[in-house]
Length: 454
Image 1 (cartoon, helix red, strand yellow):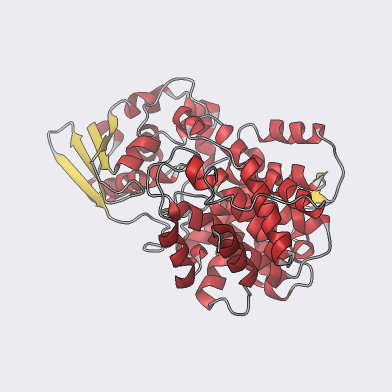
Image 2 (cartoon, one colour):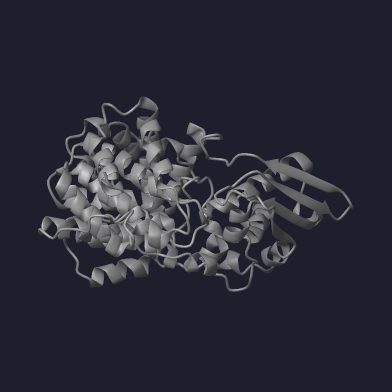
């Protein structure tokens, strides 16, 4: 079989009742996390402009926008805005080995599709998340070289299509055609990351929106290409430097990928989290303070250096600052953590933070693994002549070091509060917990107040 057939057959074969309990728990956890992050994203930089742009494409329709009760858009437009909001503050969950944010695209596409047509059973909605994340992550894991294209968008669109066809229980050929169409829309490069531009969440948004276009083309009777993944001009040949697809496909039989997804405990690029935690530990265990710091070097794998090793600079955009580890460490040293409110203009322009960040560097340690986040270590030289060090062997929020329930709930409440919807905290917890038995998944979520008509 072709890779497309293998992936679509896998997606269509996912059933909620046969999904292991630990995987079901992970689905509920990251559904809840992603919804809350999407609500907070209504106040992300440029989110209002993105909404206004999408409204210019046409208002009305059946689909809701997270954190904006009363706003209704055509489904494809809602998918675009929701995906932008979920990824717009770099707070959404991530699959580290695949270097991919699977829920920003998959969830945004499912929310939009589920509202524009017949009601969806909660268990079909949840099974679709499993299927979509499996497919997107498999394509990420197939890559054996460094990032060139922006994988959350390029692999993400295939995950979206797989999720929708599973949720709607399409037959095999109906499912293969939109998977083929997705290749025409698979786009997004790492240039936006290099420059720290808000085009990153735009690329994620475009993947979610375009997945609905791919579905609609197939529903209109247009056949899709037959080999969008492994053809000579398919996804892997064009958008990955090197790849090993058979090894990645073999992993499908070993468990569902969402169980290996990591929380983001801080609203920054995931590559910055190790440095933030190392700094927090140096403060707690070694007494490190801003006034004591002479120099700090964070020695980490090449991926970390590439993604967040950029220098701090005046007039940074929030997107640049979220991917600037020297600035993130400076914020941590000053405030003890990094939070959503730290990316407002007054913080970005704070001369004390910029001066402190100038004493911090990221050093490539030569790790041969192009997808490694750890091990890493922070080495600080203090003004009194002492040197202190902290090693990081796991990422906070990873399966090896998961957030506690209390930490998860605190993040969720913080996101809802940032989006002005703190009152939805407990209703949303209850809705996600009971979604398995819901006759209409979106009606259950709308009832919490985080989305839907006024």
